[in-house]
Image 1 (cartoon, each protein chain N blue to C red):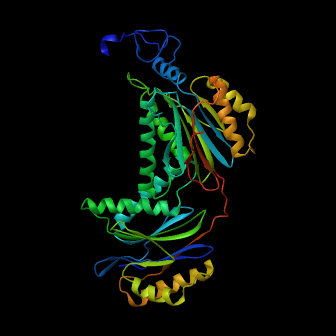
Image 2 (cartoon, rainbow over the protein chains, first blue to last red):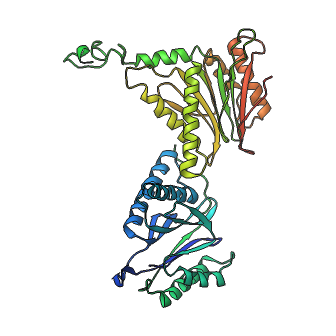
Amino acid sequence: MTTIVGIKTKEGVILGSDKRASKGFFIGSKITEKIAKIDDTLAVAIAGQLSDAEYMIKVAKAERRLMELRRGFSLTVKESARLIANLAYSGLKNYHPYFVELIVAGVDQEGGHIFAADMSGAITGEDFASSGSGSPIAYGVLESVYNKDITNEQAKEIATKAVAAAMERDPGSGNGIDVLVIPNLLMVRERVIH
Amino acid sequence: MAEMGSASSGIGNNNTRYPYYYGPEGRLVLVDSALEAVSRGSTTIGIKTPNFALISSHIKPTKPLVEPAEKIFAIDTHVGATGSGYIGDILQLIDEIRLAAQKHRLTYESPIDISSLAKHLSSYLHNYTIYAIRPQAASIIIAGIDQTGVQLYQVDPSGTFFRGAGFAIGQYSDTALDLIHRGYSADMSMEQAIQLGSKAIEKALGEERPLVETGIITAKDSSFKKMVNK
C-alpha cells in the first residue's frame, strides 16, 4: 500500500507521501508519517512494513551520527544509502528480509541525491522515484512533467500532484499528503572537528 | 595474575602489583621498550603541504644478492603509508589498515577518510598496551587525501596519533625532524619537499646518498604513487 515519491532538483530534493496505513481492507491510520527525517540533510520515505522501516531508520540515524563524530564530517547521501542497502541485504540473506521499499533522499557537498532502496539490498540512484501500491499512477504524473531544470517549488507541486493522482485511483493510498523539502547546502566545505 | 597481586594498592610505587605494565615512574614499560625499538628503526619521514604529502623511508643496506625490503606501501588508491621499527610488525599494521580501507568501501561504497584510518590503527595498537603482551614495535606514518584535503598522520605503538605537516621517526629522527622543521614552508614545491626529505634522512644518517624509498600523493590527482628509487 502507500504512495511515496522523491524528486531531485538543482536546488535540492523533495519527498512526498500519502498518510494512509492499511490493515488489509481496513484503514489502520489516517495520519501516518511516512517521511522520516534522519537529520537536517537526509530523509527517508517509507513504503512497506512500518516496523522494519522504523528499525532501519533508527540504525541509519545512529550510524550516521557515530560516523560524523568519529571522522568529523557526516556521511554522504550515497554512503548512507549504501549503509541502509547493506542492512537490507543482510536481512535478505539471513532469511529475515526487511519488507520495505525506501526512497533515500538528501543533500551533501555534491548536491541533492535520490536513491531507491528495497528489500533485495539493491540501490539505484534516480532523478525521481516512486514506491508503494500507488507508484504506477504516481510515475505517470512524474514521467509526463519532470525535467532536470525544475525548482524546488515546482518539484513540490509535482510531488503533490503525483501523490494526489495515486490517491484518486489506488485504494491503498489516501487521507492527505506530506511533503518535505531539503534544500542544498550552502556548499560549506569546512566544518571539520579534529 | 592472582599470585602476584597484593592487597595494597597504588600503581606506581608498588612494583609487585602491576609488574607487567607500569614501571616505577608510572610509565608503561613495554610501550617504552617498543618506542625504544622504533627509535632504532630506519629513519622515516613525512612532509605535508596543502597541495601534497610525501613519505620517505630509508632502506637499510642488505647483504649482497638480497633484494632490499619494500618500505612504502599503498593502502588504497588515495592513501599510502610507511613505518619504522620491526618490519614484521610494520607489515602487520599495514595489512590492518588496508583491511580497514576495504571494509569502509564495502560498508559505505566510498574511500575511507584518513582520520578514520589513523584512529583505527590507534585503537588496534592501544589494544596491545592493556594486556601483558608485546606491543607492536612500529610507528606508522600515513599520507592520504579525503574530503578535508591532504592529510598526514603519525601513529605510535602506544596508540597515540598526531596530525601534522612534518614527522620523523626511527634512527636519529630528532635530527631529521629538526631539519624538516627548519626547511619547511607551506608553499614549497614537490621537488623542494623531496629534496628536504632526502636531505633530512641523509643528515640523520650522516651518509651520502642513502637508499631511500618515497611515496607521494597530490591534491590534484589524489592517487597515491610510489616513486622510483634514485
